[in-house]
Image (cartoon, rainbow, N blue to C red; front, side, top):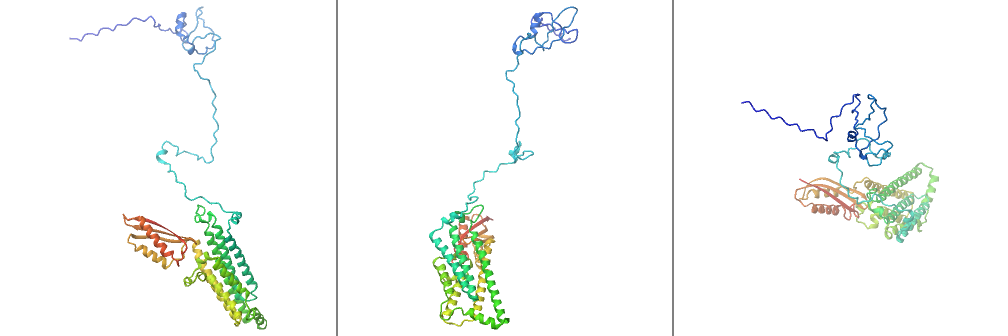
Length: 463
C-alpha cells in the first residue's frame, strides 16, 4: 500500500500588528515614500534617548506633482530647532600622555626579569643576613689622640725624647771613636723602637686599632709591623755604614801619611783620660736600663727578634738589641775607668763587632716582619713539622689534606686545617682537640707565637 500523504500545514492569518512589506522607492534611493502619517510614526522612535542629530537638508523630490515626506529608519524625525541629545551619559575628556623620563640605571632591551615566565627561570635570591663586621671604623684625629693619652703613656713618650737626646749626645761626644759612633746608632734604633711602642699603646685606646672591619680585616695592627720593618732596614743601613767607616779608617792607617794620621787618631782614641768616667757611655747605659726595666719599652718588637740562644736569659737580656747596647756601653765605660790601654785597633774591632751584630739583628727582623707582611709564618721548621705529624697520627684523622700556618701581626697567628674523617665521628671534639694541640705546640713560652693569639679553623670532610 502506498504511504499516506501528509496533511497540509495551515498558514495562520496575518496579524493586524504586522506591517506589510515596505515597497521600494521607484527612484532606487531607499525606502518608498509613505503618505500615511500613522505608518510613519511607527517607524520613528519618539523617545529622546534614541534620538540622533537631524539629517542634512536635501531638496524635495518631485513625484508626479505629489508632495511627499521621506522617512527612514536610520534617520529619525527630529523637531526643528531642538538640541540633539547624546546617547551616552559621560562627559568627554581629553587624555594626554605624560612624558616618561628613563632612569639612568634602567637597562634597555627586553626585560627578562619582568617577562611572563621570569618567575620560573630567574628566581630572586634569598635575603642576605646583615654582616657582623662594619664596613669601616672612624679614624682618630690628632686632637682625640692627644686627649686619650694617659699619664703613664705621657711619661713614656717624654722618656723616648730623652732617649733620642742621649743618642744625639753620644754621637756628639764620639770625638772620632768609631765604637761610640756605632753605639749612638744603636741607641737611635732603641729610641725609635720605644717610640713605636708608645704610639701603639696610644692607638690601642681606639676601636679601629684592634677591631676588624671590611676595610681593615686585621685592624690597624699591621701598621706596627710595617713600622718595625722600616726600622730593621734602617738598622741594616747603619751597620753597613759603620763597616764602611771602619774600612776607610783602616785604609787611611795603612797607606795614608802616618805622621799626620797617627797622632790625630791617638787623640781621638784617648778622648777620656785614664781613671775618669765616660759620661756618654754612662748615659747610654742608664737610659737603656730605665727604658727596658721600668717602662717596658721595646717589648713588642723585641718578641720578633728573639734568638734561640738568648731565650733562657732574663727578659732584659733576651732582647738582642738591649743586650748589645748594654754590653757595649759597659765595656766603653770600664776601659777608661780601669785605666785599660786604649788603642785604635781595639776601638775598630769593637765597632766592627757591633756593626756585624746590628746587621744580624736587622736581617732577623727583616725576615720575621717581612713574613708577617707576606702573610706567612716564620716560626716554622721543626715545630710545625711536629704539629703536622701529631695531627696525622690522631686516630680520628684519616688524612690531612691541607695545613697552613701564618701570622697577621704580633698579636695574631692563624692556622687553617683541612682533614678527612670517618663518617659518624664527632666533629666538635676533634676541632677542639686540634686547636688545643696547635696552641700548646706553637704558642708556648718560647715559641714564635708566644704572647700571640692563635685562631685555628678546621674543615672536615667525611669519607
